[in-house]
Image (spheres, rainbow, N blue to C red):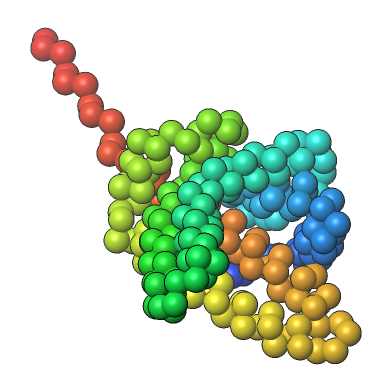
Length: 236
C-alpha cells in the first residue's frame, strides 16, 4: 500500500464499529483513576496484531487478562524508548533551577540550559519515535516483548519500507495528531461535557487510527523483503 492508501484506510477504520470506539473511550476516561491504563494500550496492540493477521474489522473487547498483559508490554516499551529524552530534558530543567539558585545573574545562562537541552531532547525524541512505532509492530508480530528491542531487525524493517516513505508517513501522522489535538481542544471548550466528549470519542478514534496505520506501514516491510533466491536447476 502507498502512504495515501494507508492514511485513507486508517481514517475509515475506527468508524467500522462506533461501539468499540466508545468502549475504548471509557477506558481512556478510567485512566484518570489508573484502571484504564491497564486496558487501552493492550487493545491498541490487539488492533496492530489483527491488522497484521489480515483482519479489517476492529477486534473484540475480550480476553481481558491477555489485554492487561499486552498493556503492560506497551507501557514498558514506551518507557524504555522515551526515558532518555525525558531524562535529558529533566536534567536541563534541574540545571536551570540550580543556576537560578546559585544566583547567576545572567538570565540567558539558564534560558540557554533549558533551550539547549530541550532541543537535544526533541531530536532524541524524534529519533526514538521513528524506531518506537516499528518496534511496537514487531512486538505485535512475534507476540513477545523482546521483539521490540531487536534493533537490527527493526532498522532492517524500516529499510524495507524505505526510509523516505517511512519519514513521510511519520510526518503525516504527526500532522494528523496536531489536527485531532486542535479538534479536541475546541470540543473540550464546551462547558461541562466538552472534555468528556473529547476523551470518549476524539482520543480513542485517533489512537485506533494510529494503531491501524502503524500496522499497515509495517506490513510494507514484508512487501519490501527481497524474494528468496531460486535454487539453480540441477544439471541433467
